[in-house]
Length: 197
Picture 1: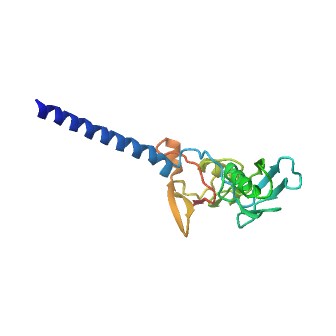
Picture 2 (picture 1 turned 90 degrees about the horizontal axis):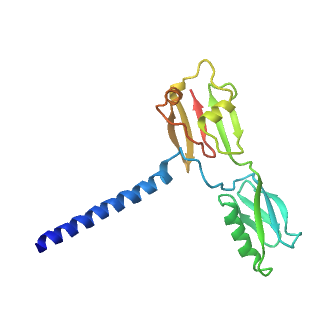
């Protein structure tokens, strides 16, 4: 009788462990590789225009562009890394730096003009080029911006190249399968290149 209870407790613990492990891996999977989900946070990039406001301090409040090296320049704090941060993260960094010069600084950071989100479309499209986007866009959105395909385009062999460090990750995009509902359209990321052979 006692052995039966022990066995059922062990079996229950194993089932709970397996369910917990499966739940944690499925929760992580979309964050790592799901390009179909719309990105939920905008990160500042080079060429973006920021409006920095310091409450009751007009001399510190100004509109600043993010330089190609990803930094902005402000009085007192000099160069501050902005690219790669969210507006909230940059605000926290500025508050920390300005606290050395003024008590309890109130800072707001507004991305007033997005200029860093760029993708390229090359190959057999009507208007190949580099496109500056103001919001998230899918592959189909960008192909539409490029005027669609030429008569020589190989619609089933489109490739999206995404820079990852020193390498380029390749993702196949089959337009014919998208139209047939056999493949999903997905959102592009900054720096992506859509190659239409």
